[in-house]
Length: 244
Image (cartoon, rainbow, N blue to C red; front, top):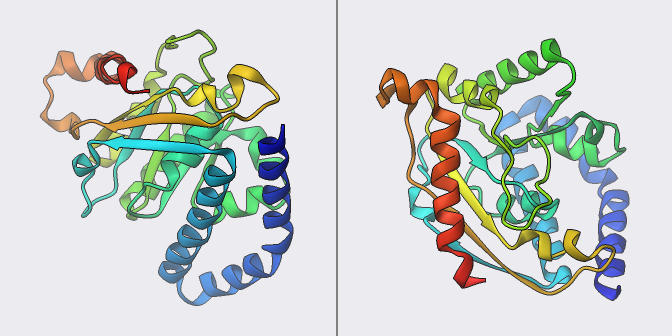
């Protein structure tokens, strides 16, 4: 329980004491949006690294060289833990917005930082709003912001289980032309979700697959892009099981 207390206390204190930073970031964004992006990225990366340290999480990363540095990308990953966001965000080389559940947008201060980081909030029960969010994500990518989404829509609770990918997530890459980066995450649920409420020292493996450009696929591959990417992530996931 001590790790949970430390993590929770740090998060609460960070959110409270970061209020002056949020004010500064607001005015910085008025005059220099690019500087605000870099500043917000650095601040949240620092906070997330502190969370991982307090939680006792160690991460092995594979395939990071597959992430293009000169263009925004669409990260597609499997989802087993809230820590998936923390562990993957500290690896992004450029401003990256995550697509989160709409309820996250109602959390004071946290939602402010998420908006600073170009995160978007998706209501999967509202098709019209969901499509609007996807189109907003397309515009983000066109402006140079990477996007990360977990297309299962919810955390898989079965051991080594995967939920079907929602095909709409891939519209972001289709309409923007950006590459898709498959992302497999092993053992993340063992940090917290597998033994609530305790946070335990855990080793996690993250692997990034080679970029996929939808424009280079044939018609049949485009039609089943969700299944294709899911298969790649599964292959990396099960290959890395022996490393955790």
